[in-house]
Amino acid sequence: MGRKKSTFSILIICVVLIFASIIIFYNLEHTPAGTNFSGIVTKIVDGDTLDIDHKRIRLSLINTPEIGQSQYEEAKNFTSEICHIGSYAIIDPDDNQIPSYGRIVATVYCNGTNLNQALLNANFATIIPQFCSISEFSDESWAKQFGC
Image 1 (cartoon, rainbow, N blue to C red):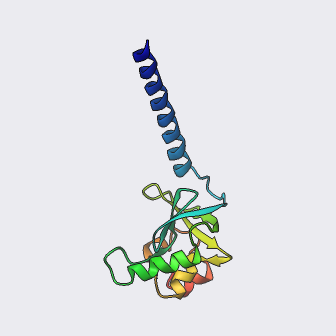
Image 2 (spheres, one colour):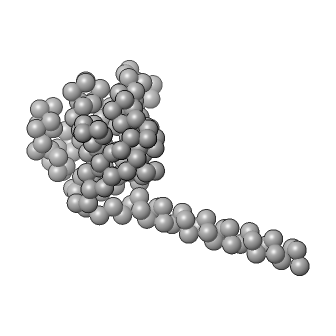
């Protein structure tokens, strides 16, 4: 009797974990175009990638140094200063770009500051020109100022 009970418990736990994984994956990949949302910053991955409510966000149109490159830590720290863990953020997904590697491509606002623009202004980021013809943000003044 005890063996059947523990097998049943393990089965239930597995079903719950599978169901939870499906929901999390669906929510990451299916943020409707044109739908801004908000949340709490839960992790700073690097200068141009952060997690908001555990959703991975890749900043639209910009690129910051990667790990091991000059100014990687400075860019990551700058992002952390603007959008510190626990802070409220508004996410404006780029309607013209599909999620990249499970990440939502977007412009992020923390404490009233456009993080994409702030990284460019601080010289921690550069514009990615090949996305200027795609991104809905390419006509924004900050994008044009830095090369779109």
